[in-house]
Amino acid sequence: MAFAGFYDLNCPTDDNIHGWYVDSEQSGIGYLLNYTMHIANVGQQYPLGAFYFALESSAHAHAAGYYIQYAKTYPWIVEWEASIEREGKLCSDDSQVMRFE
Image 1 (cartoon, rainbow, N blue to C red):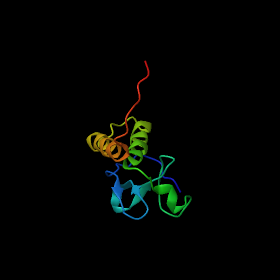
Image 2: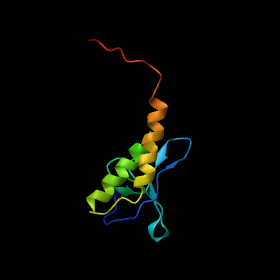
Image 3: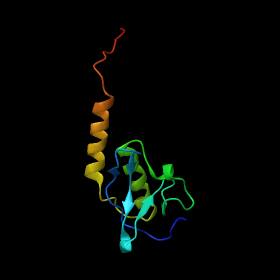
């Protein structure tokens, strides 16, 4: 079940098994952000996989989208930018570009 209202989100976390997730512990109750940018409990309306993201930057993007829905400023911009830089380095290679003139 998705919950109405805004919940502050923690910075994305990698559980080293399933991938990256974004949680909120507002009111002492743990909720997770799913791929539809809603806060929900695990196992209610969404399968477990709906709460995990393959890339840290993707988890940040969904969390930022959640904040935008509520006209709030995403607090983890610096961490998001760093994740994009790290992931870019992982994907880069030393291939050369051929130039045709």
